[in-house]
Image 1 (cartoon, rainbow, N blue to C red):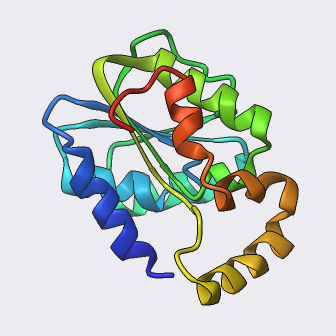
Image 2 (image 1 turned 180 degrees about the vertical axis):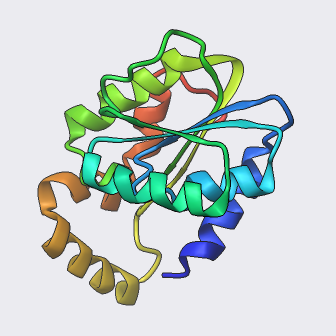
Length: 169
């Protein structure tokens, strides 16, 4: 995987502007969160993750980089933010770790915290375009579990987005 390349592409399509509030769901060690802040220094950027240990690493990376971002501990399907708090919600390689119920709840929560005109942008696994990549994704499924990865492999995320109230999926 070319992590930097697909995250750069995700940022390019998100069209983040000065003054936007951006939420990175499943921020992990903060790679995408910090990329957002470097590329869009006038945006307010928040990373959220359910693993406090990785957030310690993210906060350390942020401090060493001298970037002003916030890292919050919380779950994507129970966001600790008020309605209409963000202009953009980004997610990179989170959804294939969630059960179907968690995916659906996460998307409803993302919709809730987005302002009118806000957008969600997701980079994650989807249906494989050929047998070789399908075989490669089988390794991901063996590592991460079939219960959480099957919806991604079957291409169900777009339908879930629509069901959560998102348009132009």
